[in-house]
Image 1 (cartoon, rainbow, N blue to C red):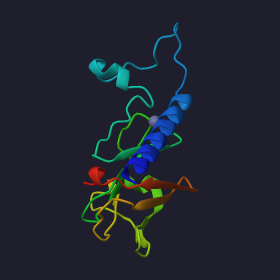
Image 2 (image 1 turned 135 degrees about the horizontal axis):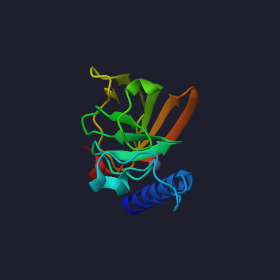
Image 3 (image 1 turned 135 degrees about the vertical axis):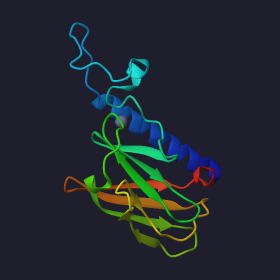
Image 4 (image 1 turned 90 degrees about the vertical axis):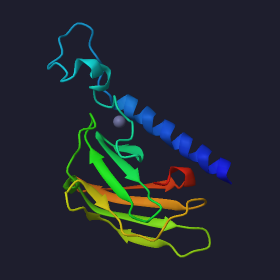
Length: 160
Ligand SMILES: [Zn+2]
């Protein structure tokens, strides 16, 4: 069971990265960059979709050119952080109607409505403790008026 869940997650991550790659603009060999990167040492990471690393120990996903990082926590205070194409933080208010439905084996589905935290930086849930194995989290949010939905299999080792 654990193995199949991990495989599913790995495939999903690979597909998402591939989707990112297709949407990245083609680099031109004979034109000057419009603007120099702020930090030459990290030039390779400065382009759109050059950085898919977690900034908040979560799972980085994307919708168009907007990235979002889902942080699932053992104490139920799950978070979602939004960032732009180059992973600069976006205010949580870029999204709306952020919810999670957590399906655990042999338990009723837990429905959570997330709220923007005190700093306006992330969406936060006040849910029940989450153990992990066998659980699925369905995340829904609205971005620029468009509803989006994704299902994430929970891996216990990835809980924060
Ligand atoms: Zn991306």
